Image (cartoon, rainbow, N blue to C red):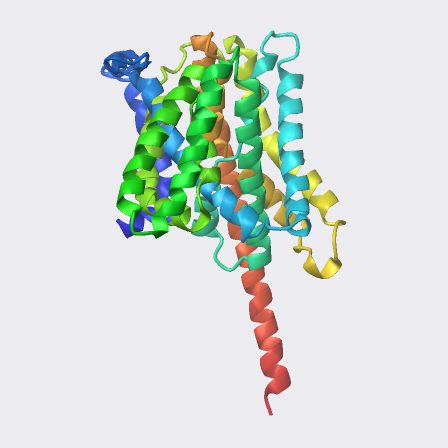
Length: 393
């Protein structure tokens, strides 16, 4: 199962699953698959009654957000974002990569009544972005890699905040309070994982996690936030071990299954002029807005902090980071579903826009990452040649 942990494999599986979902949705079995996706599965004796699609997006995807939260906590405590000086530069770039795509979306959709979809193009799929970087970016300096990784992680933090704040309506405070107790209990139990009671603690943590997820779902807050809270509260070292154990499942099953389910969309048989404004807003904002926003933010961040600690953010490097940021995919698909939950037709067009916009960003970032890697390879060879000339007798 080790190969499934690879960022390259994870990106390939995600893309293949989305492509398969979109293809099958537009064949003869498409209607049957969509009907299956809408079929409800209830847990007897509980108020939980979700469609298959929502069990995937609200249930299984919470595991992915748990893994993301564990990684975020690790980076914020002992990793690349464990101090203000380390976090401020990628944070400025990430902020630009959120504000500009939102503004581009709002400009394109002005007067259409669909302003609520502005969060869709603000997200970056960290798994996919790092997959592209792993495939095409051999030879890129570690300082620049770290900047791009930190930028993607901070983008995820913003996405989590947006989901929690903007996609919560009429929250049930009682359920939220009970969920908070569950989160606290989960954190306390995680301290027992390094003692002789680890088996009992692990079983109890699973039960508490499921209960907490249920309470968050019933509270009106999007259920994936439960995964975030549990990942952040868990003790770091055992959490990293759990993350390692869950990685094959998230990369090989959960994310591809979500991508397949989200991409089950019938392509509208209409002229481009008849597509809703959100389609064009998302399609333009993801690849274009992200490149502009991250490039501007990254350029501004290059003036912050001690010169010797700044990454070498050349215009080519900034464009590359911006193109990688435009790969919205998983989180953008989720935000699209939440933003247009009451308008299925627009949601379907939004899904297509996310897939197309992300695909454009994938192609652009693959090209730019390859060019950047080739540049640094040539630079390294020139330096090695100069060194040989100086040291040769």
